[in-house]
Length: 71
Image (spheres, helix red, strand yellow):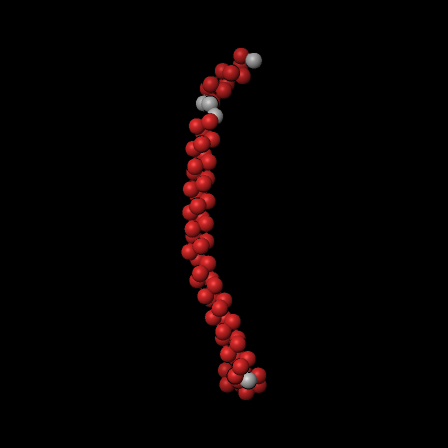
């Protein structure tokens, strides 16, 4: 089925509506890419910061073993 058959069967406005919907779909995906990339970068930064804070707050494993041996 060609485009001309679709226009003849459904009319030009239906075809224009389909093309517009497809264009909006593609535009939304193009807008989503930078936002998704920023979200991934923020997640990586937060995970790294969380790991640094956690390692700074917890004692070393040798000290933890010494503390548990005394108890």
